Image 1 (cartoon, helix red, strand yellow):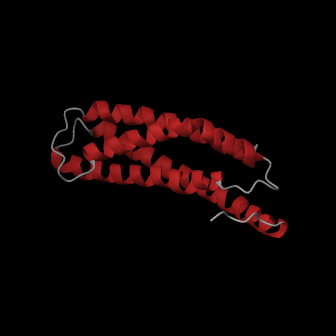
Image 2 (cartoon, rainbow, N blue to C red):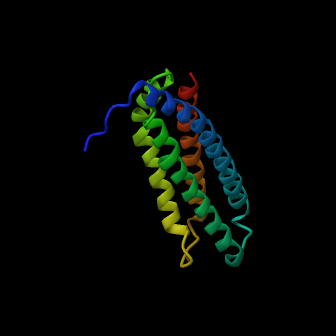
Image 3 (cartoon, one colour):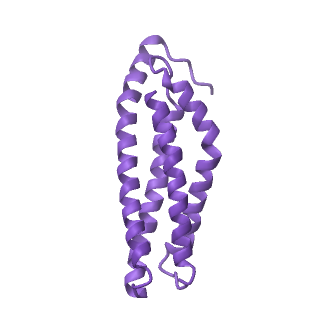
Length: 158
């Protein structure tokens, strides 16, 4: 079933909702991202000194935060950007175009997060010999994702 086009009044309402919701979601994503970066940094700096008993809960918390952050981006923020009605918000078309352009790169960062979570997020994790390298790789992935997201956010407000 095809969606019916929005009439002018419905489009105006949709624009207003989008205009209010998106900045709040972007701010929430930035806060989640910063908390994740802080946890990642703490774990990266301490992983050589921590024993397995201290490492497992820290890794599980990092993995949960990582999954929550990626999901918030893909299923809330980017989805709202895709559905931008376009009238009254001149940045909508350029934002959608940029999102399409960088979607594969965002998907790659999401897959890297899933891979990290699969390796370290379960209670059955018992191998830590690659942890320092994997944390470094995750840090680079998060930095790349941050740069992509900030390009998107700049396009939304342009």
